[in-house]
Image (cartoon, rainbow, N blue to C red):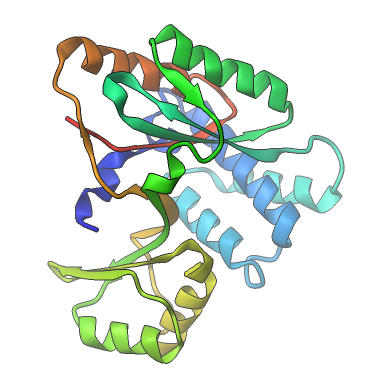
Length: 239
């Protein structure tokens, strides 16, 4: 699987030019997560992981609390996930995850990013079969055998496990996310995860070396980053 996974994910929360965008994107994701799985982080592991990640990205507590309070009310705006796939500059494969309250608007906005950079948006599934939808859990620990044993004893399907410089990274299918976190908590106690995410990991890479393609790729990402509905972009580009 390799540690290069971090290089192939463009997180809108980490590349936005302004803090306001970061807060907005986390607020929207927390709202949707709390509304779908419950507002109590102790009973909603996805929400707890999301809150921890937001805090690490320096999202203020009042932004987090406001999103949860909004989810408690149950009314107002209603966001739904939307996923778009296609081929970016240089023929690289791209997956774009959004949260939207207007799918028609979002599709039009994302499609414009493709057409303005001479790229092609595709139908659902056109590139996602070339990615693994994986849960990634990374934390400080130096006993890979004990971690692997705890996961296997809990019947967790471990795709890969890496140990490097006192940190262990566990890869599992995305459907095993909750089971894997629970197994690790029961075996190791409270864990401060460096990475606690579900991502699309490419099975291969598409090299991009042409200067025009590189410039177009930067423009493509910048345009997507400017869209409020876009949460994350995954790609297989290798520079």
